[in-house]
Image (cartoon, rainbow, N blue to C red; front, side):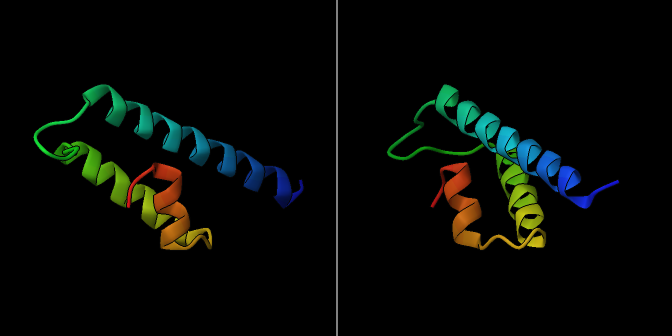
Length: 69
């Protein structure tokens, strides 16, 4: 079994997870003068960032994927 297909699957799963996060934030809309994230969204973003960093991505790359600064 090759390692490449597993990494490709992980990459697709991470991409889908980032897209889901962005959709959830957009659906929530703006609250107050800025977009506010729920506690669950913050935890999800932190977990995503950590997973992407373990895969070798920078914080900037992971944040861009999530659509956050």
